[in-house]
Length: 384
Image (tube, rainbow, N blue to C red; front, side, top):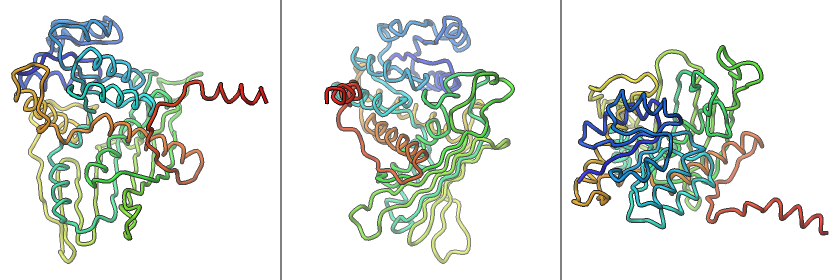
């Protein structure tokens, strides 16, 4: 039986998600917005019966058993953790910090019977699902290099908000780079252990953001990752990622994996391959075509991935009669909260590297840090 859905957020993702959910048979009972006006406008536009600016009104709604959280990263942890504590299944976007991600992991471990997955839709894109299968079948032989290029227009909102602030989770690295980091881990089956990165903010003010306000989130990012292979002769997989959001025109999304016997490359939603010795690459998976509405703010790979993820959610919940029960099989490829913690740890390591100019180790948090640690150190120094 399909659960009733409550949606947190009124942005572009929520506007796309709700029609996709309804098309698959889900009933969306409630929507939350940061103001009554925003929530009311979206509810009227998409035919949602209940809207509110109070989070508890959605979380405690008797018909809501699946909560979809698409709000600013600084607010994600609070809603996700509370939803799990109440007994709701959770699909959510990334958190703002590794500490927030760790708290979400802790909550998910307390309630293993509940669905708790991250909303990285690229894993569900057919091109990447096919690429992963071909990598498992050793189409490219031993994986050596991954190269990712994502180019597009500015990620900033029309008005000054969280997308402008690095500390609130804005910027290309956090917004887009996190999905790339997760995707590379999914494709290779490995995790990064060392990273090196460079972040820049080329557009600090524009026609709408000026005066005393300045953009601190990055619009250009380049980073390298060494993944797996710490004990092998090969040294693992070398990954390079370039993100540039100062590019007017069409969106570019390309992921290439090069190995000892060939290469695979996903351009947009299509997958190509070429083996060593072959004169040209072959089309392995074409674009099946998008029949839904075009969304300017959401690139086609993410849009098609979101549609595939919603279909997987339907299959997962339909397998059981109880509204909150779900089957793991259809959503097995979805990133868990643990994956979200890993991704956020890599993001923060890249940021440290950009400041230090050095390679940084990726050390995943195993326990929540003491919030009074710095205070205790200061008191100890004064005592001595």
